[in-house]
Length: 70
Image (cartoon, rainbow, N blue to C red; front, side, top):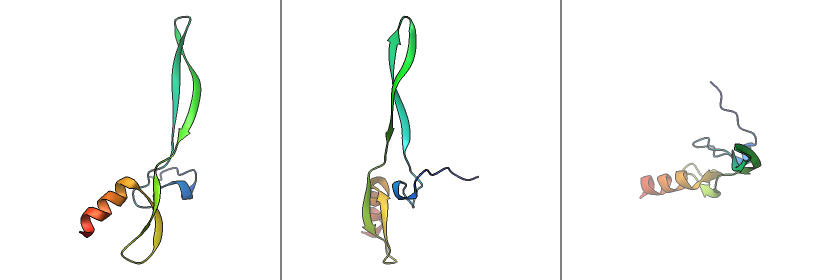
């Protein structure tokens, strides 16, 4: 099973976390309509792995890496 990743630079290579699309709902004449949709991206930061490679990892993975290293 493959996970759809729209842009590899905006996805965490460690956990695969990528963007999500969310919408606001507005009540209009008794029906909820999706009026505005926006794409939310994960908080990616540059981090150096133990192998010496630099990757953009999400902050949750960064916290896990910091916890395991120390």
